Length: 101
Length: 171
Image (cartoon, rainbow over all chains, first blue to last red; front, side, top):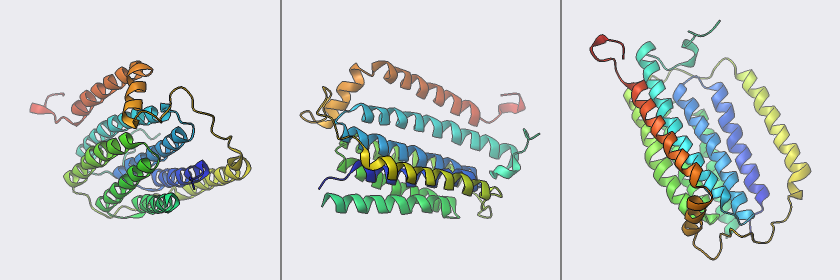
């Protein structure tokens, strides 16, 4: 009655694809960062599923580190968003063209 | 029973993640992400990773999402922005990855090797938190310390980036 690891792979692929498409199609920077969180969570699901499958805690330790990095990424990313908003009073990615050739 | 829980969690996770991308209002997107985080925590419990489930709720749902909501409300966003013009590119990339995932799972997914017999670092026997702490403070001690350094750097960076220029001089 146990769940095959195959199902977890499918779930993780669905969530990861959703996050990827979200990063590419949305124009709001905050939604783009939320989509990055979706992708990180998709990989974490994979890690935990395989950790249980192989009876090894290394996967869970890796999820722990991924969580730390996600927290750091959110702190820096949101600070950058605030700085951008202060400079342009917009968070629409179309309007940030300073580095565009 | 186990399958019932898995399908419930998987369905809610998939629907909530689609809603995160599709909803217009950033606050609704963030709240839908909150639902997704809670169900991922439930999935971790069903995978016998109780400590990670607790950390998921505390760190993701408690800290990261509050930070997002704080910024959304601070910036007082209008809702008029919508999809980017480059959505055909997104379609092509997403479709390619989806086809690749389907092909790989159909060809090789069924042939995942059976789980090996318990290695030395077993999850069983000890509780999950004890096993995780044992691995974290012995085998992974150096990455653990590096992670603390990364958090320190991120904290300093966030303060410097978001700081307002005081007195008009260069910050």
